[in-house]
Image 1: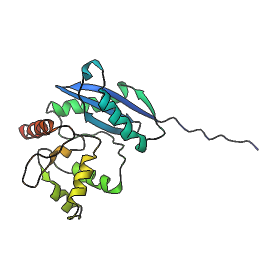
Image 2: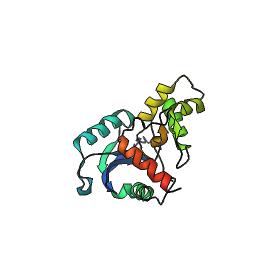
Image 3: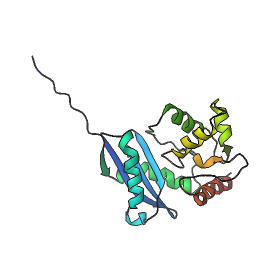
Image 4: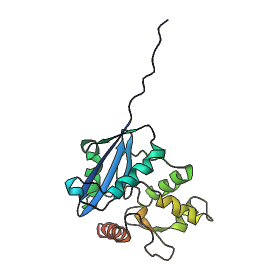
Length: 187
């Protein structure tokens, strides 16, 4: 009888820094899709990754992608960078990127609700909670939105406080405001 060895395919996280229209981003993806897109401080134009941003990414990925190896690979990220650049230039309203999002069932439901907010429109945290039939879970909704690993593509910037005020955004409130203005101007 012949023994067949199980070979596990090496799984990789492809990562890189990108500078797009005065914004520095740290981007990561697997073969299945985009897993991480965050603003970062630093000189991404020169390919330098901010140490704090790198630490945040690797710590975040440890639990979600434990058996993956890391590979800096700008070519593997070209599609993501291209669509992000088109969006920031006002040429794209929706993304057609594959996503490989890992989170709890509740987080996944919140991120799906974010995907459904139309370009140029905003909603409140309580409206997201109502949509999910979790009207008493507004804080939990806010926490799930704050855990969104792919800013812009999963448009958490479209969520405002109940009174319409700009509130919490991992990319900074100035960037949130820029994104909302960009979307309003494009309409």
